[in-house]
Every structure is written in C-alpha cells, then in structure tokens.
Image (cartoon, rainbow, N blue to C red; front, side, top):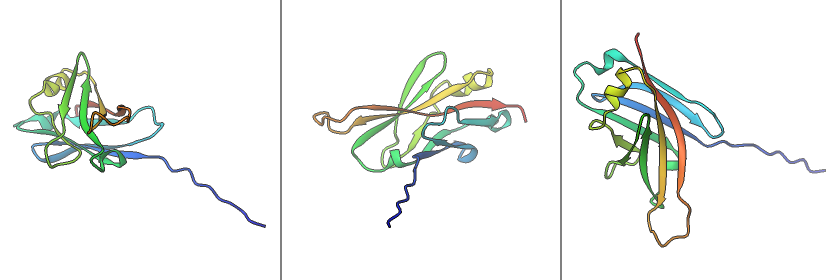
Length: 136
C-alpha cells in the first residue's frame, strides 16, 4: 500500500524599504494574500537622501523577464529596476515621500514583461504591498 503526501507551496516575496540606506520597513507578501503592509515611521524621512525598495523572492530570479515597480496612489508611476541589482528600485526622485507624509497609502506592484518581445510569454502584474507612514 502506497501513501502519497502532497504539499502546497506558496510563492512569497520579501519587500523591504530603505531610507538613507537604513531599513525602514519590511513585509512578506504571500501568493493569495490580500494585504501586506509596510509602515514607515515619519521620523525616518528626516535628512532624506534616498528611498529604495528591494524585492526578494521567486519573481526576481533569472533574465526571462524585465522587472519594473509600479507605484499607485492618486496616479501611477513605473520605476525600472536598477542595472545589475536585481530586485532593487530607486524611488527617490518620485513624489512618494510627499504622498506618504500627507497620510495617503501607496500600493506597490511588480510588473514583469518578457525580456525578448518575440517570446510568446504573457506579461504579469503582481501585487506586493501597501506602503504608508506611522507617527511612532
């Protein structure tokens, strides 16, 4: 008699926010999960020089897809992945800081487009997390 076991494995991505090269927040987004939140202390934005989002997980490996970060709020902006740094997105030049400090929440999506346009692979848009500020 043979018994079979099956395991359900869910993909997950770890999303981290860095302000001035210091970790300001982190969350783990699991496939099928509705919400994942990174709350950044408002005091982290003092002496603000850089704002980096780093994504690690199964969607970051390989060169099959070009990766972009879509930030949505009142409007939408697309940020390209940093060259030779898979999963890193520099959002310093966006208005993300001002939007967050005004009390609004931003949503982050990972956009995957085939690296070779002639390939018959579909593009993907994957929800990563919500980004907001907190007072403490």
